[in-house]
Image 1: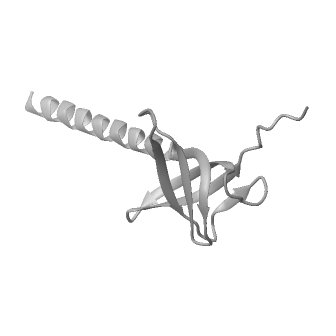
Image 2 (image 1 turned 180 degrees about the vertical axis):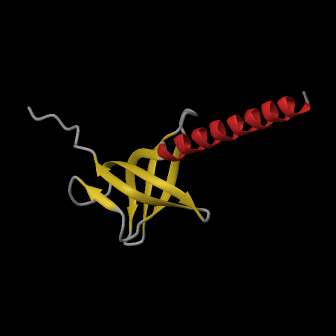
Image 3 (image 1 turned 90 degrees about the vertical axis):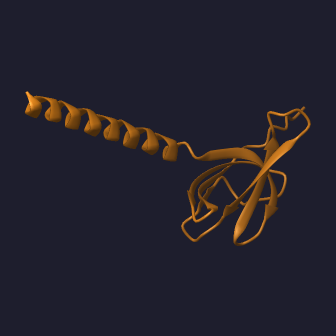
Length: 107
């Protein structure tokens, strides 16, 4: 009886550990930020977007490395961009930057 209880307890603990690991992996895949490029240097990007709080903006700084991929052309200030990043060592590192097409309509 005691062995069945310990076996069930062990199975339950391992199940919770597996679920926690899957949730953590999903969180890592969703690290993205879309906004307007407000600062561009060789080692970092600063991107801003309107916050959920009315009248405020949210700005994030992303480290740029040799492994950072940039798609859609050259980075220019005031462009809309999408950044996928990883968080490590108190700094977010951009792994992919996609330049959004301009929304200007021609007449």
